[in-house]
Image 1 (cartoon, rainbow, N blue to C red):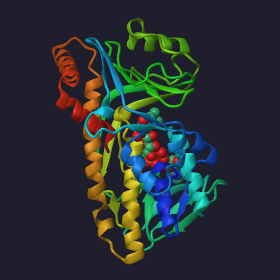
Image 2 (cartoon, rainbow, N blue to C red; image 1 turned 90 degrees about the vertical axis):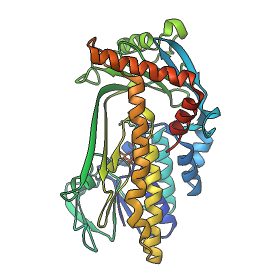
Image 3 (cartoon, helix red, strand yellow; image 1 turned 180 degrees about the horizontal axis):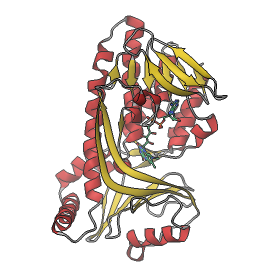
Image 4 (tube, rainbow, N blue to C red; image 1 turned 180 degrees about the vertical axis):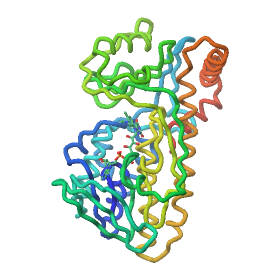
Length: 387
Ligand code: RFL
């Protein structure tokens, strides 16, 4: 078995396979230090935690992660809080930075005897319609190489080799939401005990816990903005304004240690199986970070595929592999639908033409229903923590 990519998807898959005695190798383009420090997601759904529990992968997150169950909306109509852990399924997130999860998964994989090749970039997957597909690679020193296996799992993200190797006829559903965020990591403790979503005429601003010293912020910006175009001071002033710090209390400032430009885009590939090649995580579907689903879907898909592969390779039962694509896509589309709804909740067009006014009033009404309708709140809670 060859697994491409050592993100959450590839490492959960690798761990389960190795634990079941299935021979596999993970090929990772980056070096270990890079993989272990790449800051991205931080909100793990309860189902994700249960999956990690089932496979002995959750020790670190239970020790260092923090439970989280409230979000706060700040809008032109005031502020309201949703204690989502007391609504819907009465469940909460665990806040645990993705790079720490990846570090834990990697350590466990190696301690189980798993094999991983860092600095090895998959270039193409060939012969996926046959019995022994081949993964062509470029080694760290630039030399070409190749790996053969019964199956290949493409866990190498949206720009990986798995996606590039799909046959003609693979369908890509795609949506550009027309919204751009500056993703920021600030060396500052959280400023509120909730996820903060601020809807402002100047654009969206978000506040999300990470660790006691680091907080993630998002600021909607013009398309084409360069990641380092804004000074720290401008970022904090804009966050203060959009999060209405004057009314609701100051933000704790600190150095902005990392900035990236995140275009809100979603896509889903279909099917997720092409012969012996399977797509998992971001390689299967890219989801906008508006509802924090990407890493959770990656873990869920990895467990689904690991089970199906184990059945096939140990008992010859291939039903799970045949059903993998449809099963995984059911979860993916539910998450896409909710993320899309969240984008509409948090952003409106800035123009004053009739259509912009109409869409902004819809957004405002959507927020009012969320503030006032208990059934809406229960629906929100179920989808917000679920995958
Ligand atoms: P990853 O984590 O991108 O890992 C893919 C791995 O494959 C390697 N790779 C290759 N290796 C070999 N050959 C090649 N040709 C290769 N090409 C790539 C890469 O180096 C990498 O190690 O994919 P995976 O495992 O599918 O996991 C997906 C998640 O990382 C992603 O969905 C989330 O980070 C998305 N996301 C969030 N998800 C959440 O659930 N909650 C959040 O709060 C959240 N916040 C975020 C996010 C993503 C963000 N960015 C940067 C897009 C915040 C941000 C800013």
